[in-house]
Image 1 (tube, rainbow, N blue to C red):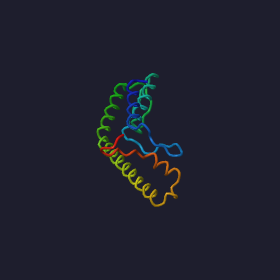
Image 2 (image 1 turned 30 degrees about the vertical axis):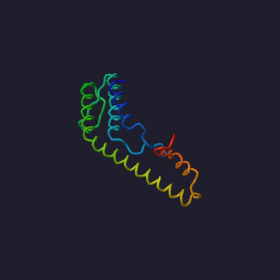
Image 3 (image 1 turned 90 degrees about the vertical axis):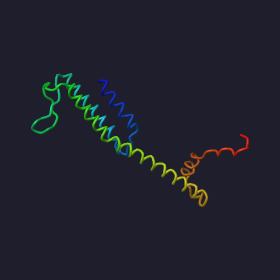
Image 4 (image 1 turned 60 degrees about the vertical axis):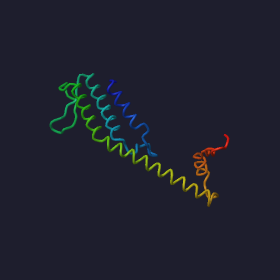
Length: 153
């Protein structure tokens, strides 16, 4: 495996370290730049394998799909082309990704604040209706209050 493939895979993991999965094990959502990195790494690994066999990839003029042909383009040119496409896609999508991450984090904070408010109200007005999980979740977020000025520690 080439250094480029390793760097692309590492960057994909850095951008999207823990993708969410549903109960069927299918990936939920995606991080566009991480997906581009993963696809580029897969494509380069494929091209390197073809190159080791003395083949390279070329677009079929009739259907536009990638087909294995006798070495007509150099692997280096294809890698440079993929790196350029990846850089363009990264520059294009990065502002949208950053904004999406910011919005996601804000929504998580709002949700946590609303859940804390709900838990506080339930503890005050109907503590007997709280499940053990709700009580444990509430308890896990409790912190000791700072000492008042003049009080000893």
